[in-house]
Image 1 (tube, rainbow, N blue to C red):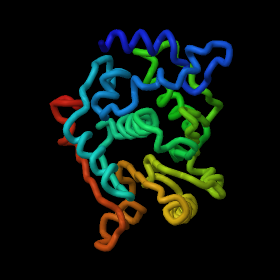
Image 2: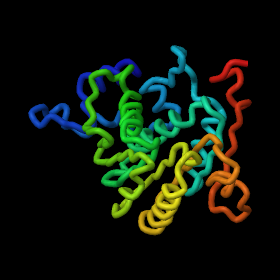
Image 3: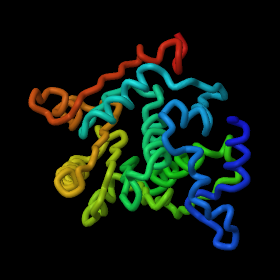
Image 4: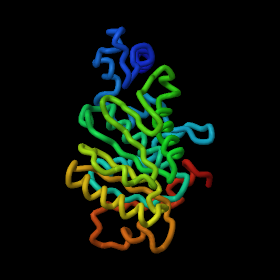
Length: 245
């Protein structure tokens, strides 16, 4: 049955960019391959993460992060480098888009890196999630924008944080490596977080390796009244899994 689904998706789906001359491709029922799938099932269909040429399962600590994002509106993740958090959250956001219609006509914002070239790389990573199992899949995109199932995904470099202003219906805001931004960028982004929480009931995911002792992440970590659900993932969570012992 799974092989049949893969063939169906490869032959009929060009997700996000339908061919009006091909009624089979236009049939929304063809998207049912992803609808209602759990996070693990979705990853089984699109292919598991690959690092250094080796395929990895979705690990227990990663499932704990997914459960926390589903439960809380504000998530703060202080992590060691190389444990796969950026990949995990990109997969989570993609799963949320494909597995139901709840995000249709909404926005998903990702802030990553300081330059537009890095933001473009993040968009490419999201598109490439489907490359191994669905090489013929086409997604509408431009340099730092991606459209999937009527969901607009915009990736911003941190230096363009002012461009976050003025949108409506923002479902998710993923701030990657947020502890490495300039103070002026942090101020602008914290303002945007507050506005989208109030306007759109937005879920914020803030994730970073720690940078400096007087920075954004330490201030949240030490705040006993912080609105963030705090997750700390040191290097030991990946030992024998994504990291060598």
